[in-house]
Image 1 (cartoon, rainbow, N blue to C red):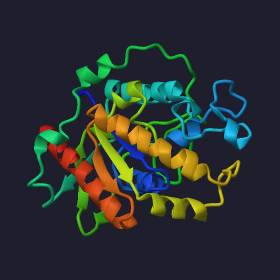
Image 2: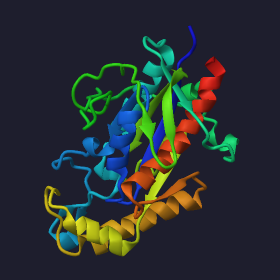
Image 3: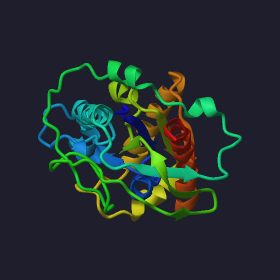
Amino acid sequence: MTTRKCLVVGLGGVTNGGKSTTARKLSQVLPNTKLICADDYYQEDNWPGHVHLENYCGFINYDSLTAVDNQRLTEVVKAEIISFTQQGLTNSVRSEVDGIGQNEDREDFIPNSVNDRMDALTSPNKHTSRSCQSANGNSVSGPVKGSSMPASLHVEVSSANARGRAKHCDVHVILIEGILIFNYEPLNALFDRRYFFTLTADECCRRRDQRVDYNPPCPISYFDDVVWPSYIKHKAYLENNGVKLKYINGAESENEVFNTIYKDICIFLKAESSDFS
């Protein structure tokens, strides 16, 4: 039985940049995919380790690394990788991508080897993983109810930049999305592809002002004083430390953003598919 290949893809960066929407779309069309949302791993509000903002009457800084239980998130991702790499495929999916990516730098798309990945999976599990449901009707994993292995998915996708049709591929994809997923080093070490979403401050603020689903609601000036400075600081940390990122302009249309990332992932899947043809 062939060892299962696993591609770990991260969608991180600016808030309200389109990460969640893109991740859901990708999870609906990519074969054998799990979607893990970092928002599902926020610490409870009564957690004693939160950073409280004195200028905002003790309001929690939800844009800090400590606001998310990154250790538990990392352990869940590790468990998914081990599950994918140690079990044989029950159902195979063939993925063939025609006429895309011939001019790409192919070395850029080679993932970490399974052995290299396994070296990173040595720390013991300190938390019980939960599983979450995502909006897509296929396979999604996250933190709340017991997860199941994804069934094979046969899809037809047509777009300006990508066209896929079924062909064999012993590859599974784990999608993780969240604003600071690349800034927690144990988690960042697991990614094969890192897509970093960007926006201008004005556009980010405009989108954030249109949202009504923040609970609790953010105080006035929270964006200017906390959200945007946090984004700039954590982006600079990644760039100063040489983390390999593929920048995604979140101001582009949803389809353009989806096509860019989908094409990139399909090139990897095509390369893997040729190994098992």
